[in-house]
Length: 316
Image (cartoon, rainbow, N blue to C red; front, side):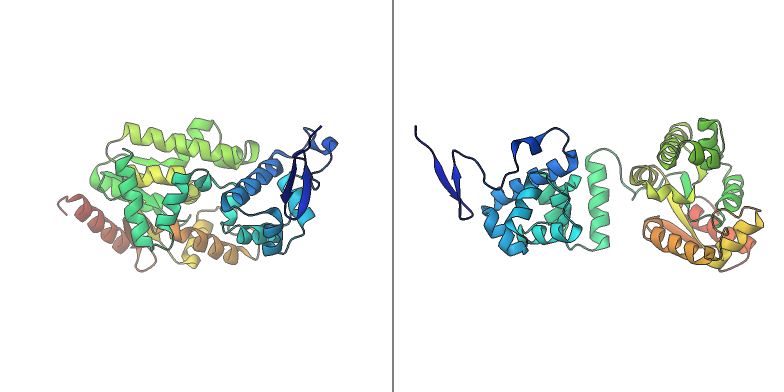
């Protein structure tokens, strides 16, 4: 009876068996699906690079046994080990762990084209892709005015004033979310969680876009956290970022009698600054911006009114 003998990584493999492969009983269906898929990606990337397991283990400074366990979904490799393996395979950590933008050659080629591009180039690409796919871009002017910014920026107050001035409907998206859910925002998050809240938020925005060809929409501060919803907003609305200093955000929220979650602890101001810093890059995608801390309310509204009317080419 003949046997097939292969050489892999300096190890003898008989009849296609792998001496580093875990025993058959370890291949039971109770393996973690993520770890199994991770192992398959490692093997696939190794094959694509034409590298033996030994070569990868040497380049990654990881034992061959450890690498074999990783490839067969055994054990839970640390993030540092995964980073070393990614380096050895000359791929990103995202590709190794299965990021959606690494799931096909086209995705990878697009990523390569965009790698290292500046924000201005990336924005032009995003707008062009939106127009190509029929989802629009954020370069067009829409009579739906969406105000974005952190709580306390003045979206409700200035939004109502702007809607009255333009004779547009005023839509406070937070209230529309509560209508969909039949309970308050706090109750939605407490009872159903953040994911459910984001679903209601998206539905409320979709309905507002469908119903109102012209409107002023005050959006929740965290809307930018859901990229799909934020993309819809950028596509179908003229967006205005109402900026304010952290101290003004805090003062205005407290003046409304609402101390959650910004003023719930002594670290509140640092938390607020952290939230603002984390969201500012997304708020900055708005087409227009008005600083609501630079002048009193009436002067701020006059600036907002002028900015919006000029953008919509309406008589001031």
